[in-house]
Length: 282
Image 1 (cartoon, one colour):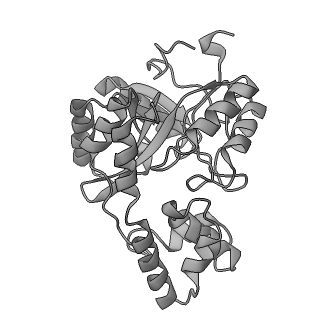
Image 2 (cartoon, helix red, strand yellow; image 1 turned 135 degrees about the horizontal axis):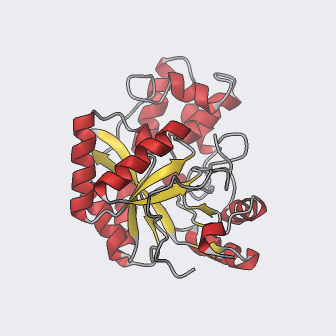
């Protein structure tokens, strides 16, 4: 099979971070959906990478080592995906451990805010949905709030809670953009801006963000993602062409029934962009 015929999914999650399924089941679902080249990109955590690699190889998929790093830039959280990383790189391992620190304190503050708005027992409830206690996140609180009947689904939760200006939102100071790109590149990887269409920046701020990312050695941007509309595929393809970024794609799958797009469910990249995998030996 030629590279142009392969189906790529280079952004998804397992229960090592905030996904629902273990890495092996995510791999099996990707394979069943026709994915040929796959990366597990758990949030600030690389403990699932070796399991993902073994599962992918057993299923005959090409595996790409991955991670998604939480970054604070201009007062907002953005995510930078690392692809083709060496997950044993000491600086990456230590940097991610430092980034994870503080999640428990933040989680307890989220629970306290939610209790003030009539949602009791949120911390304990969220913990029931956590595969890795070091990575308790807003997603785990959202699942608890669906479970206890506060909202119908996680989309309704995030429309009314846990986001900026809504009950339960507690900001956290993540890695800097410079740190994230440095860790990824130091581990032999390619730094990718994840789902840029989700970030609430002005046009001027976006320009500064893209410029700084490129100057730091960032190389790629997600064009087709489960977080983008078809119109945004074209919008961020144009961004990729303008800044000289490589184009990446990934479903951002978290679990059955919870994600907008299933593994392998995205269309091919728009014409006129250079894929992030253009020079990979597959």
